Length: 64
Image 1 (tube, helix red, strand yellow):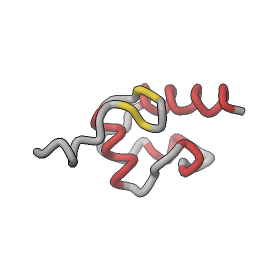
Image 2: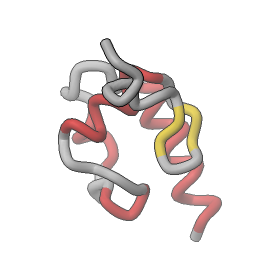
Image 3: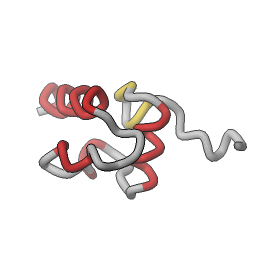
């Protein structure tokens, strides 16, 4: 894998891990604002687990 394909562990400033970041980017999400209102709908994405959803939820609530 080249470094251009590696999305890294951080999604829009939130450290959720490489698999979750890659899954969100592959699904077309680029920023926290792109995420669906119901973050639990992200759980079926391979690489996105409950911890990533919790961290994203916390980031969104602190941004409000």
